[in-house]
Length: 178
Image (cartoon, rainbow, N blue to C red; front, side, top):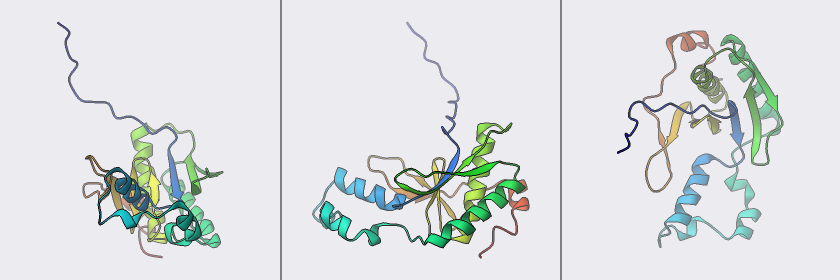
């Protein structure tokens, strides 16, 4: 008889620690996936034909202007400098508007991820209506969101996610509107 290993599971580190601004909000993408997975009469009109989606692209994209990237990158790099984390802007992928990756660091992966959450929150105070992805969490309207467990994916507010005291003290002036 084989024994089953029990105990605490190890957290998997994110592949490349990054803060990402996707073109389509994660909430919209998960709502569309949910409608496709479990179609109902009252949700069939939520997902339109591909031609109609391409024609009305402005309504599915996140609000973004060309001059939003500069202040967002400046705020992220300033916050990263205060938290002793190297952050560089790299070429975004096809479904992203902006990608900021964490450079090599002596910190543990969990600490890097926590600091990325703090930086994403500081950026969210600059542009609150924008969805930012940092690891497995999203930041929108200055609040953390996570994917809910269950058969259909949907985003719920992550009520138990808080910044550490040191990170809050370091970023105190950046964690305010404007």
